Length: 428
Image (cartoon, rainbow, N blue to C red; front, side, top):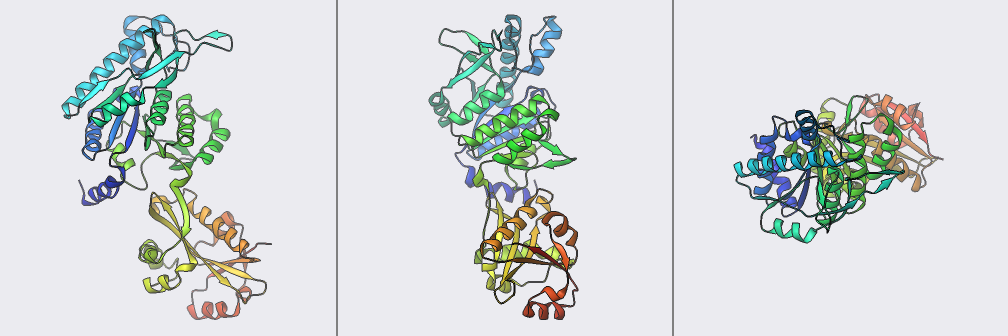
């Protein structure tokens, strides 16, 4: 382990101590070569006093059993009709998987139990069709699960639910994980799937607010596989009902679980409740952070050089973008009260490389624009040597001349010798 990896874990460990993480592991992940490493990662989380509930799927194993036993299955994904032969396959597959999980956790010296904490009822008749042995989660015995967690035991929950008459129903593991995370007020719900989150135009979509995720689903539902649609829908609901963060990662990838949890940029896609990200006014203690953040761009002459003292002096002009209490972007807004018409300058816009191409720069730009407008400014200026296309294409700025600068700012512009392009946006 590199020192930076250890620092990342130490940074987050105090925050997550005694918190509950619900891990929903797809059945194909359980069959992958990385399964044993995943259990080791779970052991690491337990060593940091993070409480783990492990929910698992079974569709991959049901498919294999169906072929081996020559028993046709009425549904593989747990969201359709479950006839009686398929229910028997589901019970057999779930019991085998639970036993394998218990074996693996024992090998990492972790105590676990397979629970019957999911109380279910028949899904009934949908659109005129009897769903037979497909069930819906009625409630979760949260008190039982909490007692197990307090005793240091990992509850293992199969995609099966039980009613008060001793009958068993097949339930969808995504839905089970959602209900469990809500019942336990979990800090995180993590989907360990065979996909490393969402990809749009070939790029990983690393973060979604609930509203952004809902809009993404609306616009792209037809192009998404049902499994991903399910995770997004359940993730939205989890965040709406008290779960802080929902993660979708590739559970077959070594160290994916730890990387997603113990780094601000993560490795998969995250849906977050609204408090997860924030643009806030910078404080004096942020001066050093801002200086470190922009250091490389200053070296490549993209941004003006600023000392820590200068940033601290002008800290009232700065705003920062935080993710999980880590500053990953900044922007400044300088007012020119003597300008006619009244104007302000957007300055020092920067986002860390690890969070590039995620829309953060545009959010900071729009925030400053709204802020300038609320302060009565009629024009917003920006000076740039290398990012002028970005301001024009993403921010709607147009190219102007140095004559548009207020007198004092024009003097500084001439003295700098940078010959930055002048960009202007009318706010009225």
